[in-house]
Length: 95
Length: 490
Image 1 (cartoon, each protein chain N blue to C red):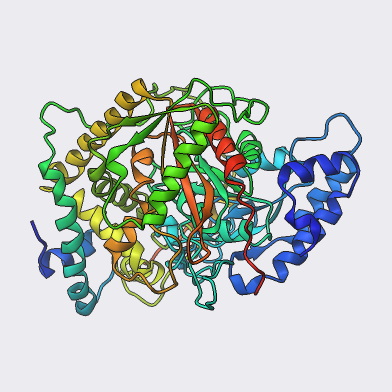
Image 2: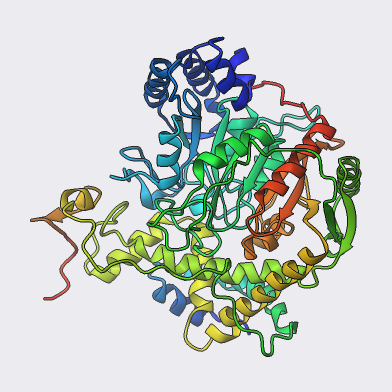
Protein backbone atom coordinates (compact mmCIF):
# COMPACT_ATOMS: atom_id res chain seq x y z
CA UNK A 1 0.00 0.00 0.00
CA UNK A 2 1.23 3.48 -0.68
CA UNK A 3 -0.21 6.85 0.17
CA UNK A 4 -1.14 9.63 -2.24
CA UNK A 5 -0.84 13.34 -1.54
CA UNK A 6 -4.61 13.41 -1.08
CA UNK A 7 -4.33 10.76 1.65
CA UNK A 8 -1.45 12.57 3.32
CA UNK A 9 -3.55 15.73 3.37
CA UNK A 10 -6.34 13.75 5.04
CA UNK A 11 -3.94 12.27 7.63
CA UNK A 12 -2.62 15.76 8.41
CA UNK A 13 -6.20 16.88 8.96
CA UNK A 14 -6.89 13.93 11.28
CA UNK A 15 -3.67 14.72 13.16
CA UNK A 16 -4.55 18.44 13.31
CA UNK A 17 -1.24 19.52 11.85
CA UNK A 18 -1.39 22.38 9.40
CA UNK A 19 0.66 21.63 6.28
CA UNK A 20 1.34 23.50 3.06
CA UNK A 21 1.08 21.73 -0.31
CA UNK A 22 4.87 21.71 -0.45
CA UNK A 23 5.13 19.97 2.92
CA UNK A 24 2.52 17.41 1.88
CA UNK A 25 4.38 16.69 -1.36
CA UNK A 26 7.66 16.25 0.52
CA UNK A 27 6.06 13.86 3.00
CA UNK A 28 4.51 11.54 0.40
CA UNK A 29 7.76 9.79 -0.61
CA UNK A 30 9.07 9.83 2.99
CA UNK A 31 5.99 8.14 4.38
CA UNK A 32 5.88 5.67 1.49
CA UNK A 33 9.48 4.76 2.13
CA UNK A 34 8.75 4.04 5.80
CA UNK A 35 5.43 2.28 5.11
CA UNK A 36 7.05 0.15 2.40
CA UNK A 37 9.67 -0.91 4.92
CA UNK A 38 7.25 -1.77 7.75
CA UNK A 39 5.14 -3.81 5.34
CA UNK A 40 7.73 -6.60 5.51
CA UNK A 41 5.72 -7.69 8.58
CA UNK A 42 3.25 -9.21 6.12
CA UNK A 43 5.74 -12.09 5.65
CA UNK A 44 5.34 -13.14 9.28
CA UNK A 45 2.80 -15.86 9.89
CA UNK A 46 0.67 -14.56 12.74
CA UNK A 47 -2.32 -16.86 12.32
CA UNK A 48 -3.65 -17.74 15.74
CA UNK A 49 -1.31 -15.30 17.52
CA UNK A 50 -3.04 -13.03 20.01
CA UNK A 51 -1.87 -9.40 19.78
CA UNK A 52 0.26 -8.40 22.74
CA UNK A 53 -1.64 -6.24 25.19
CA UNK A 54 0.62 -6.11 28.25
CA UNK A 55 4.37 -6.33 27.90
CA UNK A 56 4.85 -7.49 31.49
CA UNK A 57 1.97 -9.67 32.57
CA UNK A 58 0.08 -8.06 35.42
CA UNK A 59 -3.46 -7.35 36.46
CA UNK A 60 -4.71 -3.82 36.23
CA UNK A 61 -5.30 -2.56 39.71
CA UNK A 62 -8.60 -1.08 40.80
CA UNK A 63 -8.89 1.59 43.43
CA UNK A 64 -11.80 2.73 45.52
CA UNK A 65 -14.05 5.10 43.63
CA UNK A 66 -13.42 8.07 45.84
CA UNK A 67 -12.14 11.59 45.33
CA UNK A 68 -8.45 11.50 46.26
CA UNK A 69 -7.12 14.59 44.54
CA UNK A 70 -8.32 17.96 43.42
CA UNK A 71 -8.92 21.49 44.60
CA UNK A 72 -5.93 22.72 42.61
CA UNK A 73 -7.68 24.77 39.93
CA UNK A 74 -5.08 27.50 39.88
CA UNK A 75 -2.27 24.95 39.48
CA UNK A 76 -4.14 23.34 36.61
CA UNK A 77 -4.63 26.68 34.87
CA UNK A 78 -1.17 28.05 35.65
CA UNK A 79 0.35 27.01 32.31
CA UNK A 80 -2.65 27.82 30.11
CA UNK A 81 -1.91 30.16 27.19
CA UNK A 82 -5.21 31.84 28.09
CA UNK A 83 -7.46 31.39 31.12
CA UNK A 84 -10.52 33.42 32.06
CA UNK A 85 -12.82 33.24 35.07
CA UNK A 86 -11.22 29.99 36.21
CA UNK A 87 -11.57 28.28 32.83
CA UNK A 88 -9.35 27.50 29.85
CA UNK A 89 -10.19 30.00 27.13
CA UNK A 90 -10.27 29.06 23.43
CA UNK A 91 -11.26 30.84 20.22
CA UNK A 92 -15.02 31.14 19.80
CA UNK A 93 -16.60 27.87 18.62
CA UNK A 94 -20.25 28.97 18.24
CA UNK A 95 -21.22 32.04 16.25
CA UNK B 1 38.48 19.75 35.62
CA UNK B 2 38.37 19.46 39.38
CA UNK B 3 39.27 16.10 40.87
CA UNK B 4 35.79 15.87 42.38
CA UNK B 5 34.22 15.78 38.93
CA UNK B 6 36.16 12.68 37.91
CA UNK B 7 34.92 10.65 40.87
CA UNK B 8 32.18 8.06 40.61
CA UNK B 9 28.96 8.45 42.58
CA UNK B 10 30.06 5.67 44.93
CA UNK B 11 33.34 7.52 45.55
CA UNK B 12 31.53 10.80 46.14
CA UNK B 13 29.08 9.15 48.51
CA UNK B 14 31.79 7.38 50.48
CA UNK B 15 34.11 10.41 50.50
CA UNK B 16 31.33 12.62 51.83
CA UNK B 17 30.63 10.16 54.60
CA UNK B 18 34.31 9.94 55.47
CA UNK B 19 34.54 13.73 55.61
CA UNK B 20 37.13 14.00 52.82
CA UNK B 21 35.16 16.85 51.24
CA UNK B 22 31.84 18.57 51.70
CA UNK B 23 28.70 18.24 49.61
CA UNK B 24 28.96 21.97 48.96
CA UNK B 25 32.40 21.49 47.41
CA UNK B 26 30.98 18.76 45.18
CA UNK B 27 28.04 20.91 44.07
CA UNK B 28 30.26 23.94 43.47
CA UNK B 29 32.71 21.88 41.39
CA UNK B 30 29.91 20.56 39.25
CA UNK B 31 28.15 23.90 38.92
CA UNK B 32 31.42 25.40 37.68
CA UNK B 33 31.98 22.50 35.28
CA UNK B 34 28.44 22.87 33.90
CA UNK B 35 28.92 26.59 33.31
CA UNK B 36 32.26 25.97 31.58
CA UNK B 37 30.82 23.41 29.17
CA UNK B 38 27.99 25.35 27.54
CA UNK B 39 29.49 24.80 24.09
CA UNK B 40 28.36 21.16 24.36
CA UNK B 41 24.71 22.32 24.54
CA UNK B 42 24.05 19.47 26.99
CA UNK B 43 21.91 21.43 29.45
CA UNK B 44 18.75 23.30 28.48
CA UNK B 45 18.34 24.79 31.96
CA UNK B 46 20.97 25.12 34.70
CA UNK B 47 19.79 24.96 38.31
CA UNK B 48 22.94 25.62 40.39
CA UNK B 49 20.85 26.84 43.33
CA UNK B 50 18.99 23.55 43.50
CA UNK B 51 22.28 21.60 43.63
CA UNK B 52 23.65 23.91 46.34
CA UNK B 53 20.48 23.70 48.47
CA UNK B 54 20.57 19.88 48.38
CA UNK B 55 24.30 19.98 49.17
CA UNK B 56 23.76 22.21 52.20
CA UNK B 57 21.03 19.89 53.46
CA UNK B 58 23.43 16.97 53.01
CA UNK B 59 26.25 18.75 54.84
CA UNK B 60 23.91 19.50 57.72
CA UNK B 61 22.86 15.85 57.91
CA UNK B 62 26.42 14.51 57.64
CA UNK B 63 27.48 12.57 60.67
CA UNK B 64 23.88 11.84 61.63
CA UNK B 65 22.50 8.34 61.32
CA UNK B 66 19.87 9.07 58.72
CA UNK B 67 21.94 10.43 55.86
CA UNK B 68 19.98 9.41 52.77
CA UNK B 69 21.80 7.31 50.14
CA UNK B 70 22.30 10.06 47.54
CA UNK B 71 22.89 12.90 50.00
CA UNK B 72 25.14 15.48 48.39
CA UNK B 73 25.08 13.91 44.91
CA UNK B 74 24.05 16.43 42.24
CA UNK B 75 22.42 14.91 39.16
CA UNK B 76 21.44 15.98 35.68
CA UNK B 77 17.80 15.35 34.77
CA UNK B 78 16.62 14.62 31.24
CA UNK B 79 14.17 17.29 30.11
CA UNK B 80 11.47 14.62 29.76
CA UNK B 81 10.96 14.50 33.56
CA UNK B 82 8.54 17.00 35.05
CA UNK B 83 10.37 19.09 37.64
CA UNK B 84 8.29 21.40 39.79
CA UNK B 85 8.69 25.03 38.79
CA UNK B 86 11.55 24.29 36.37
CA UNK B 87 11.05 24.38 32.59
CA UNK B 88 10.14 20.95 31.27
CA UNK B 89 9.89 20.96 27.49
CA UNK B 90 10.81 17.48 26.22
CA UNK B 91 13.11 19.28 23.80
CA UNK B 92 10.10 20.72 22.00
CA UNK B 93 8.96 24.20 21.01
CA UNK B 94 5.39 23.19 21.75
CA UNK B 95 6.17 22.97 25.49
CA UNK B 96 8.13 26.22 25.55
CA UNK B 97 7.93 27.79 28.98
CA UNK B 98 6.02 24.91 30.58
CA UNK B 99 6.73 24.88 34.30
CA UNK B 100 5.06 21.85 35.87
CA UNK B 101 3.29 22.46 39.17
CA UNK B 102 4.26 18.89 40.10
CA UNK B 103 7.31 16.64 40.25
CA UNK B 104 7.72 13.31 38.43
CA UNK B 105 7.81 10.27 40.71
CA UNK B 106 11.32 9.31 39.57
CA UNK B 107 12.81 12.74 40.32
CA UNK B 108 10.82 12.95 43.56
CA UNK B 109 12.36 9.60 44.55
CA UNK B 110 15.84 10.93 43.74
CA UNK B 111 15.20 14.05 45.79
CA UNK B 112 13.94 11.95 48.68
CA UNK B 113 17.21 10.03 48.45
CA UNK B 114 19.03 13.34 48.94
CA UNK B 115 20.10 14.16 45.37
CA UNK B 116 20.22 17.71 44.06
CA UNK B 117 19.63 18.84 40.49
CA UNK B 118 22.29 20.46 38.31
CA UNK B 119 19.85 21.21 35.52
CA UNK B 120 17.71 19.81 32.74
CA UNK B 121 19.35 17.90 29.93
CA UNK B 122 18.88 18.36 26.22
CA UNK B 123 17.30 15.54 24.24
CA UNK B 124 15.70 14.66 20.92
CA UNK B 125 12.25 16.25 20.69
CA UNK B 126 9.80 14.07 22.65
CA UNK B 127 12.61 11.46 22.76
CA UNK B 128 12.16 10.80 19.03
CA UNK B 129 15.62 10.49 17.56
CA UNK B 130 18.96 8.74 17.80
CA UNK B 131 21.31 11.71 17.51
CA UNK B 132 19.85 14.56 19.58
CA UNK B 133 19.51 16.49 16.32
CA UNK B 134 15.71 16.77 16.55
CA UNK B 135 15.86 18.93 19.69
CA UNK B 136 14.30 22.39 19.47
CA UNK B 137 17.41 23.60 21.33
CA UNK B 138 19.75 22.29 18.64
CA UNK B 139 22.00 19.25 18.83
CA UNK B 140 24.19 18.29 21.75
CA UNK B 141 27.84 18.07 20.74
CA UNK B 142 29.59 14.95 21.99
CA UNK B 143 32.68 15.57 24.09
CA UNK B 144 34.32 12.83 21.99
CA UNK B 145 36.06 13.51 18.69
CA UNK B 146 37.60 11.23 16.12
CA UNK B 147 41.37 11.02 16.33
CA UNK B 148 42.90 14.02 14.63
CA UNK B 149 39.55 15.54 13.68
CA UNK B 150 37.49 18.53 14.80
CA UNK B 151 34.22 17.30 13.29
CA UNK B 152 31.34 17.61 15.76
CA UNK B 153 29.94 14.20 16.65
CA UNK B 154 26.54 13.27 18.01
CA UNK B 155 26.36 11.78 21.52
CA UNK B 156 23.48 9.61 20.27
CA UNK B 157 19.90 9.96 21.35
CA UNK B 158 17.42 10.49 22.54
CA UNK B 159 19.19 10.90 25.92
CA UNK B 160 22.01 12.80 24.19
CA UNK B 161 22.40 15.57 26.75
CA UNK B 162 22.40 12.97 29.51
CA UNK B 163 25.14 10.95 27.83
CA UNK B 164 27.30 13.96 26.98
CA UNK B 165 26.98 15.30 30.54
CA UNK B 166 28.35 12.15 32.15
CA UNK B 167 31.10 11.72 29.56
CA UNK B 168 32.21 15.34 29.90
CA UNK B 169 32.22 15.24 33.72
CA UNK B 170 29.47 17.81 34.07
CA UNK B 171 27.21 15.41 36.01
CA UNK B 172 28.26 12.35 38.00
CA UNK B 173 25.05 10.61 37.00
CA UNK B 174 21.87 11.43 35.14
CA UNK B 175 18.40 10.20 34.37
CA UNK B 176 17.60 8.95 30.91
CA UNK B 177 14.59 7.36 29.31
CA UNK B 178 14.53 4.50 26.87
CA UNK B 179 11.68 3.75 24.47
CA UNK B 180 13.68 1.90 21.82
CA UNK B 181 17.31 2.36 22.85
CA UNK B 182 17.43 5.97 24.04
CA UNK B 183 19.54 5.16 27.12
CA UNK B 184 21.69 2.41 25.68
CA UNK B 185 22.74 3.78 22.28
CA UNK B 186 23.91 7.16 23.67
CA UNK B 187 25.67 5.41 26.57
CA UNK B 188 27.56 3.32 24.00
CA UNK B 189 28.41 6.37 21.87
CA UNK B 190 30.11 8.20 24.75
CA UNK B 191 31.69 5.32 26.66
CA UNK B 192 29.49 5.24 29.78
CA UNK B 193 27.04 2.80 31.38
CA UNK B 194 23.27 2.99 31.13
CA UNK B 195 20.51 0.60 32.11
CA UNK B 196 16.88 0.37 31.11
CA UNK B 197 15.13 -1.71 33.79
CA UNK B 198 12.20 -4.08 33.30
CA UNK B 199 9.13 -2.21 32.05
CA UNK B 200 7.23 -1.06 35.15
CA UNK B 201 10.19 -0.79 37.56
CA UNK B 202 10.35 3.00 37.29
CA UNK B 203 7.16 4.99 37.42
CA UNK B 204 6.18 6.80 34.25
CA UNK B 205 4.18 9.36 36.25
CA UNK B 206 5.42 12.83 35.37
CA UNK B 207 7.56 11.59 32.48
CA UNK B 208 6.37 13.21 29.26
CA UNK B 209 4.80 10.33 27.35
CA UNK B 210 6.15 9.17 23.99
CA UNK B 211 5.07 5.51 23.58
CA UNK B 212 3.55 4.42 26.85
CA UNK B 213 3.91 0.65 26.40
CA UNK B 214 7.65 1.08 25.81
CA UNK B 215 8.80 4.13 27.81
CA UNK B 216 11.04 3.33 30.78
CA UNK B 217 13.29 5.57 32.83
CA UNK B 218 16.76 4.49 33.86
CA UNK B 219 20.10 5.85 35.02
CA UNK B 220 23.29 6.62 33.11
CA UNK B 221 26.62 6.96 34.90
CA UNK B 222 30.35 6.25 34.66
CA UNK B 223 30.22 2.84 36.33
CA UNK B 224 27.98 -0.18 36.70
CA UNK B 225 27.90 0.31 40.47
CA UNK B 226 26.71 3.90 40.02
CA UNK B 227 23.90 2.67 37.78
CA UNK B 228 22.87 0.19 40.49
CA UNK B 229 22.90 2.94 43.14
CA UNK B 230 20.81 5.32 41.03
CA UNK B 231 18.35 2.68 39.83
CA UNK B 232 17.64 1.65 43.42
CA UNK B 233 16.70 5.23 44.19
CA UNK B 234 14.63 5.76 41.02
CA UNK B 235 12.64 2.51 41.01
CA UNK B 236 9.68 1.51 43.13
CA UNK B 237 5.95 0.98 43.07
CA UNK B 238 3.83 4.01 42.29
CA UNK B 239 0.03 3.83 42.45
CA UNK B 240 -0.08 6.80 40.06
CA UNK B 241 1.23 4.67 37.16
CA UNK B 242 -1.16 1.88 36.22
CA UNK B 243 1.68 -0.23 34.80
CA UNK B 244 3.99 0.26 37.78
CA UNK B 245 5.16 -3.07 39.22
CA UNK B 246 4.04 -3.60 42.80
CA UNK B 247 7.30 -5.24 43.89
CA UNK B 248 10.00 -4.36 46.39
CA UNK B 249 13.13 -2.73 44.95
CA UNK B 250 16.02 -5.24 45.09
CA UNK B 251 19.35 -4.30 46.67
CA UNK B 252 21.15 -4.25 43.37
CA UNK B 253 24.28 -2.54 44.63
CA UNK B 254 24.74 -4.75 47.68
CA UNK B 255 24.32 -7.88 45.54
CA UNK B 256 26.65 -6.73 42.79
CA UNK B 257 29.05 -9.55 41.94
CA UNK B 258 31.23 -10.23 38.92
CA UNK B 259 31.23 -13.97 39.60
CA UNK B 260 29.11 -15.42 36.82
CA UNK B 261 29.71 -19.10 37.68
CA UNK B 262 26.84 -21.21 36.44
CA UNK B 263 25.38 -18.46 34.26
CA UNK B 264 24.69 -19.22 30.61
CA UNK B 265 25.17 -16.33 28.18
CA UNK B 266 23.03 -16.49 25.08
CA UNK B 267 24.63 -15.29 21.84
CA UNK B 268 21.82 -14.67 19.35
CA UNK B 269 22.90 -15.67 15.85
CA UNK B 270 20.40 -13.25 14.26
CA UNK B 271 22.38 -10.30 15.66
CA UNK B 272 25.26 -11.01 13.24
CA UNK B 273 23.98 -8.68 10.57
CA UNK B 274 25.48 -7.31 7.38
CA UNK B 275 27.06 -3.90 7.34
CA UNK B 276 28.24 -3.88 10.94
CA UNK B 277 31.92 -2.86 11.19
CA UNK B 278 34.23 -5.79 11.94
CA UNK B 279 35.52 -3.92 15.01
CA UNK B 280 32.06 -4.21 16.57
CA UNK B 281 31.86 -7.93 15.94
CA UNK B 282 35.41 -8.31 17.28
CA UNK B 283 34.39 -6.48 20.46
CA UNK B 284 31.38 -8.78 20.76
CA UNK B 285 33.76 -11.78 20.61
CA UNK B 286 35.96 -10.18 23.27
CA UNK B 287 32.83 -9.70 25.40
CA UNK B 288 32.09 -13.42 25.15
CA UNK B 289 35.64 -14.18 26.32
CA UNK B 290 35.32 -11.74 29.25
CA UNK B 291 32.08 -13.36 30.41
CA UNK B 292 33.66 -16.81 30.05
CA UNK B 293 36.56 -15.60 32.15
CA UNK B 294 34.01 -14.52 34.80
CA UNK B 295 32.64 -18.07 34.93
CA UNK B 296 29.78 -17.94 32.44
CA UNK B 297 29.15 -20.43 29.63
CA UNK B 298 28.26 -19.09 26.20
CA UNK B 299 25.43 -20.78 24.30
CA UNK B 300 24.21 -20.00 20.81
CA UNK B 301 20.55 -19.01 20.82
CA UNK B 302 18.05 -18.06 18.18
CA UNK B 303 15.66 -15.10 18.27
CA UNK B 304 14.02 -15.77 14.90
CA UNK B 305 11.87 -12.63 14.70
CA UNK B 306 14.74 -10.21 15.34
CA UNK B 307 14.64 -8.70 11.83
CA UNK B 308 11.00 -7.73 12.33
CA UNK B 309 11.59 -5.86 15.58
CA UNK B 310 12.42 -2.47 14.04
CA UNK B 311 9.47 -2.38 11.62
CA UNK B 312 7.22 -3.52 14.48
CA UNK B 313 8.57 -0.73 16.65
CA UNK B 314 8.03 1.83 13.89
CA UNK B 315 4.34 0.99 13.83
CA UNK B 316 3.72 0.72 17.56
CA UNK B 317 5.79 3.65 18.80
CA UNK B 318 4.39 6.20 16.29
CA UNK B 319 0.85 4.90 16.91
CA UNK B 320 1.18 5.46 20.64
CA UNK B 321 2.93 8.77 20.05
CA UNK B 322 0.19 10.09 17.78
CA UNK B 323 -2.30 9.36 20.52
CA UNK B 324 -0.16 10.71 23.39
CA UNK B 325 0.78 13.88 21.55
CA UNK B 326 -2.84 14.74 20.79
CA UNK B 327 -2.79 16.58 24.12
CA UNK B 328 -0.64 19.40 22.69
CA UNK B 329 -3.51 21.48 21.43
CA UNK B 330 -2.61 25.00 22.52
CA UNK B 331 -5.28 25.02 25.20
CA UNK B 332 -3.88 23.78 28.49
CA UNK B 333 -0.14 24.41 28.35
CA UNK B 334 2.69 25.32 26.07
CA UNK B 335 2.54 27.11 22.76
CA UNK B 336 -0.59 28.61 21.20
CA UNK B 337 -0.53 30.23 17.78
CA UNK B 338 -2.79 33.28 17.86
CA UNK B 339 -4.41 35.17 15.01
CA UNK B 340 -6.44 32.33 13.52
CA UNK B 341 -10.21 32.30 13.43
CA UNK B 342 -11.52 28.93 14.54
CA UNK B 343 -10.60 26.43 17.23
CA UNK B 344 -9.68 23.84 14.59
CA UNK B 345 -7.41 26.33 12.86
CA UNK B 346 -5.80 27.12 16.20
CA UNK B 347 -5.03 23.43 16.80
CA UNK B 348 -3.58 22.96 13.32
CA UNK B 349 -1.50 26.15 13.41
CA UNK B 350 -0.20 25.48 16.92
CA UNK B 351 0.84 21.92 16.12
CA UNK B 352 2.34 22.97 12.77
CA UNK B 353 4.49 25.56 14.51
CA UNK B 354 5.23 23.66 17.71
CA UNK B 355 6.35 20.26 16.46
CA UNK B 356 9.56 19.58 14.55
CA UNK B 357 9.86 17.53 11.37
CA UNK B 358 10.63 14.14 12.96
CA UNK B 359 7.79 14.44 15.48
CA UNK B 360 5.37 15.40 12.70
CA UNK B 361 6.57 12.47 10.61
CA UNK B 362 5.90 10.04 13.46
CA UNK B 363 2.52 11.54 14.32
CA UNK B 364 1.57 11.19 10.65
CA UNK B 365 2.67 7.54 10.51
CA UNK B 366 0.91 6.81 13.79
CA UNK B 367 -2.28 8.51 12.69
CA UNK B 368 -2.22 6.55 9.44
CA UNK B 369 -1.65 3.11 10.99
CA UNK B 370 -4.45 3.74 13.49
CA UNK B 371 -6.91 5.13 10.93
CA UNK B 372 -10.08 3.35 9.85
CA UNK B 373 -9.34 0.62 7.32
CA UNK B 374 -5.63 0.35 8.16
CA UNK B 375 -5.68 -0.43 11.86
CA UNK B 376 -5.71 -4.22 11.52
CA UNK B 377 -3.22 -4.37 8.67
CA UNK B 378 -0.65 -2.30 10.56
CA UNK B 379 -1.29 -1.89 14.28
CA UNK B 380 -2.89 -5.24 15.13
CA UNK B 381 -0.37 -7.02 12.92
CA UNK B 382 2.50 -5.28 14.72
CA UNK B 383 1.11 -6.23 18.13
CA UNK B 384 0.96 -9.85 16.97
CA UNK B 385 4.55 -9.77 15.79
CA UNK B 386 5.45 -8.12 19.08
CA UNK B 387 3.92 -11.12 20.87
CA UNK B 388 6.16 -13.41 18.77
CA UNK B 389 9.24 -11.33 19.60
CA UNK B 390 8.40 -11.61 23.29
CA UNK B 391 7.92 -15.36 22.85
CA UNK B 392 11.36 -15.62 21.17
CA UNK B 393 12.94 -14.18 24.31
CA UNK B 394 10.88 -16.40 26.63
CA UNK B 395 12.10 -19.47 24.73
CA UNK B 396 15.69 -18.21 24.70
CA UNK B 397 15.65 -17.71 28.46
CA UNK B 398 14.91 -21.40 28.87
CA UNK B 399 18.43 -21.98 27.49
CA UNK B 400 20.30 -19.02 28.95
CA UNK B 401 20.33 -16.52 31.84
CA UNK B 402 21.32 -13.42 29.93
CA UNK B 403 22.05 -12.33 26.38
CA UNK B 404 25.11 -10.51 25.05
CA UNK B 405 25.08 -8.42 21.84
CA UNK B 406 26.66 -5.19 20.61
CA UNK B 407 24.73 -2.07 21.69
CA UNK B 408 24.71 -0.22 18.38
CA UNK B 409 25.69 -1.07 14.80
CA UNK B 410 28.21 1.79 14.59
CA UNK B 411 30.29 4.18 16.66
CA UNK B 412 29.12 7.80 17.02
CA UNK B 413 28.59 9.58 13.72
CA UNK B 414 28.98 13.21 12.76
CA UNK B 415 26.26 15.78 13.26
CA UNK B 416 24.36 16.13 9.99
CA UNK B 417 25.84 12.94 8.52
CA UNK B 418 22.66 10.85 8.68
CA UNK B 419 19.75 12.54 6.96
CA UNK B 420 17.62 9.60 5.84
CA UNK B 421 15.02 8.74 8.52
CA UNK B 422 15.24 4.99 7.86
CA UNK B 423 19.04 5.01 8.16
CA UNK B 424 18.65 6.84 11.48
CA UNK B 425 16.14 4.27 12.74
CA UNK B 426 18.68 1.47 12.12
CA UNK B 427 20.77 2.78 15.03
CA UNK B 428 18.45 0.92 17.36
CA UNK B 429 18.47 -2.42 15.54
CA UNK B 430 20.05 -4.21 18.54
CA UNK B 431 18.26 -2.21 21.23
CA UNK B 432 14.64 -2.33 20.08
CA UNK B 433 13.85 -6.06 20.54
CA UNK B 434 14.42 -5.88 24.32
CA UNK B 435 12.22 -2.77 24.47
CA UNK B 436 9.38 -4.52 22.67
CA UNK B 437 9.65 -7.37 25.19
CA UNK B 438 9.91 -5.07 28.23
CA UNK B 439 13.19 -6.66 29.32
CA UNK B 440 16.00 -5.09 31.37
CA UNK B 441 18.98 -4.19 29.20
CA UNK B 442 22.22 -2.34 29.72
CA UNK B 443 25.10 -0.90 27.73
CA UNK B 444 28.62 -0.95 29.14
CA UNK B 445 31.72 0.41 27.40
CA UNK B 446 33.92 -2.27 25.85
CA UNK B 447 36.70 -0.39 24.11
CA UNK B 448 37.61 2.17 21.46
CA UNK B 449 37.45 1.70 17.72
CA UNK B 450 40.22 2.59 15.26
CA UNK B 451 39.07 6.23 15.22
CA UNK B 452 39.34 6.44 18.99
CA UNK B 453 35.59 6.35 19.62
CA UNK B 454 33.87 4.24 22.29
CA UNK B 455 31.94 1.07 21.50
CA UNK B 456 29.42 -0.56 23.83
CA UNK B 457 28.38 -4.08 24.75
CA UNK B 458 24.71 -4.79 25.36
CA UNK B 459 23.35 -7.14 28.01
CA UNK B 460 19.72 -8.25 27.99
CA UNK B 461 18.23 -10.00 31.02
CA UNK B 462 15.07 -11.89 31.75
CA UNK B 463 12.07 -10.04 33.21
CA UNK B 464 12.87 -8.57 36.63
CA UNK B 465 16.43 -9.88 36.53
CA UNK B 466 18.32 -6.59 36.53
CA UNK B 467 20.78 -8.20 38.95
CA UNK B 468 22.21 -10.61 36.38
CA UNK B 469 22.43 -7.78 33.84
CA UNK B 470 24.28 -5.56 36.31
CA UNK B 471 26.54 -8.41 37.43
CA UNK B 472 27.50 -9.24 33.85
CA UNK B 473 28.07 -5.54 33.21
CA UNK B 474 30.28 -5.45 36.29
CA UNK B 475 32.27 -8.45 35.03
CA UNK B 476 32.80 -6.78 31.65
CA UNK B 477 33.74 -3.50 33.30
CA UNK B 478 36.45 -5.23 35.37
CA UNK B 479 37.89 -7.00 32.36
CA UNK B 480 37.57 -4.30 29.72
CA UNK B 481 39.41 -1.82 31.93
CA UNK B 482 37.78 1.00 29.99
CA UNK B 483 39.10 4.25 31.44
CA UNK B 484 39.27 6.39 28.30
CA UNK B 485 37.83 9.88 28.65
CA UNK B 486 37.55 12.53 25.95
CA UNK B 487 40.28 15.18 25.90
CA UNK B 488 38.81 18.45 26.99
CA UNK B 489 38.39 20.82 24.02
CA UNK B 490 35.25 22.66 25.14
